[in-house]
Image: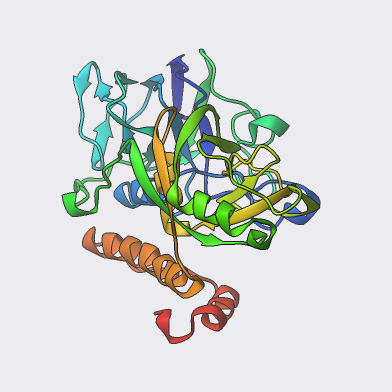
Length: 337
């Protein structure tokens, strides 16, 4: 089978797709890609299924040797990708030939890059997903990050004859300061008015304690009315916990399924990719939206992906199942097109 040999592993490179949906009730985290926008666009560019597994690369890229021809696309953070030591473009389809070596150099912007393939990474589905959950050694490539000497097999590789490039107006710019939009709750009533004002007016800094599970922030302490502990309830991607020290923690893709700290707010779906591209020392300020505004941002996020798909002349496909559509129409009514 066509394969890729890992010459250098990079830093914690893993196989990811959209995640392990429907198993949180059994204590199994969703996991999946940190940046859904870069992930989805990468698959658009190589004419792959929208949930085709990719390689997620934080900060430091690997060196990969190909023994076959295939089209790839690299999206997300700019880690200076090269083929045979020659710089290549991002956010565009690129043809790899047998014997080529894909490598990366300095990080310029962002934190996580994605390699999408016009083919399938041949690892097993575990609970319906190829995503790697490192803490449980579940899914992906033997449940772990890539190591030197690993052989990654690719099924059904192909070369895309017509080059696809993302229009520059859609390419995100990554900053070391981001305004992150949130909806208050579900435990905002556990905080004083002063505490909520502090949360919404202060600037917070990403600490070194940030990984795929969560992101600890440093800044003004947020005041509770009484205690920080609650009976454990559900945690989602973007939940903002505030433990007893008053310093917020944003839960991310590999978060636990439940948590026992008060959650002052939740990051909206459309701003999760911004978090994925932030790292140590970057600054965050939170902006409150009401639920209707957050719903509209959700709709706009997927409308933009639809526009990108259409701009690349990709055949339309159903984004939602009939069951999903019924639920979403109840939530969003006529705003869902």
